[in-house]
Amino acid sequence: MMEQLRCHADERQLAQCVYCGGATETRDHIPSKVLLDEPYPSNLPVVPACETCNKGFSLDEEYLACLVDCAVTGSTSANGAHREKVSGILARKPALASMLADARREANGRVAFAIAPDRVEHVVLKLARGHAAYELSEPQLGEPSSLLCLPLESLSPDVRERFETPPSPSTWPEVGSRAMQRLAATFPAGADWILVQAGRYRYMTAVSDAVVVRMVLSEYLACEVTWY
Ligand SMILES: [Zn+2]
Image 1 (cartoon, rainbow, N blue to C red):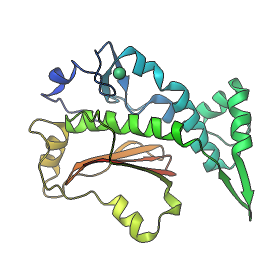
Image 2 (image 1 turned 30 degrees about the horizontal axis):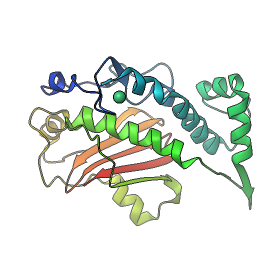
Image 3 (image 1 turned 180 degrees about the vertical axis):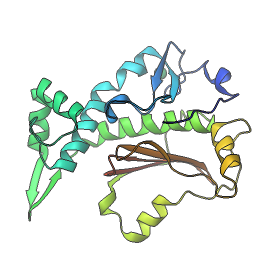
Image 4 (image 1 turned 180 degrees about the horizontal axis):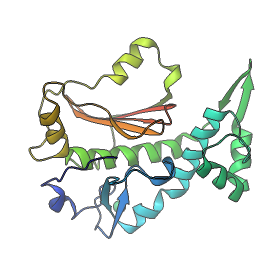
């Protein structure tokens, strides 16, 4: 179960969609439920979003959820050993299933997938913007300075170590933000990974010389988005 901290900046942020800065009409779960299994953790973080953004990511989120699970299982068949939710999507959406089957490559006994980078980045940036707004009370509406997305297993030991280790804060998060409250609660350990669902989703946010958001999907896909 996730405990959620109350945040004094929430009321101010409610005025603004965390993805585009537009007028707020709805609330959006972050991470999106398609990336999680049922039963969902209680108290999933929610962020304010406009109607367009709230609906505008769902096809790419489905694609990413299926892509990650197909990469994990090596199969694109709806009957493969998938997450239940992904089996359901592959069965309901034959066009998506066959697109993934076409993207599947096998070489030297290893399965790899050609990805649609725009679609993956669209979702990863959305997730990072949601986490940054929720944890740091700092909406990041601008283009990121970098966006990286790689299988965890492809990282060298040095890079993996750097990825797993939270950057030490050189500036403190905004007073009253969730990140500041977490930091105070764990001091002197500092920022750490927040586990949303074991084996399915974890993330961290940090303010060092940049705003950094890292996410791991299904313990397979390592993502990092930074804003300098
Ligand atoms: Zn929006």
